[in-house]
Every structure is written in structure tokens, then in C-alpha cells.
Length: 109
Image (cartoon, rainbow, N blue to C red):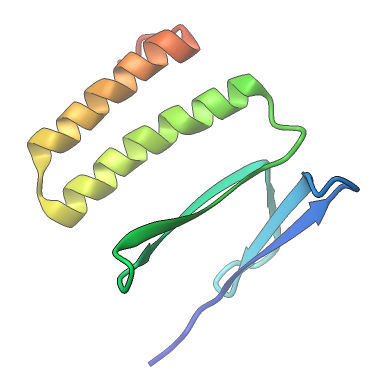
């Protein structure tokens, strides 16, 4: 059995607002920087999702909208792979198109 770790280093300002988010993984060759992260963890005992949502001061509203749009599409893909529920995944993707049209002003192909 092997293990792997993913580590986040969050630099905070005096008000504890993230200024910098760095992450590294055992399988990666170097640290990487990002502006935002959404981490969801399933607590089987409580039957509840725990979240860690962080973004830096430097992340713009437009970047956040794009980040969420891409997360919606990624969640649809993951949901379909995990459950085989293609019809619901397609509805999630349809919402992703709607989101892009209304938040980003674009119609994805």
C-alpha cells in the first residue's frame, strides 16, 4: 500500500484574508500557486459534506465566475463517471451553459 499527500500553504493578511495559496503534492515536482480552491469532503459518519472554500484577494470577480462555470462542468463529468447517471449529468451541463450565458456573456459550444 502506498500513500500520497497534498499540502496547501495559505498566506494570510492581518485580517486573515488569503493573499497567496500554494499547493504541492508528493507526485508533483514543484509547488504551484493558485488563486482559489474548493475542497469538498464527504463525512460518512455525519452523512454530510464538509467544505474548504478559499480565494485570494487577487482573484477577480470575472475569474471567480469562470472558475465556478468550469467547476459546474467538471462536477457533471465526475457525477456521471461516479454514478452512471448520464441524464442528470446532461442537465447539469445544460445549467453550465445557462450559467455561462448569464454570468460570462458567452454561449459555450
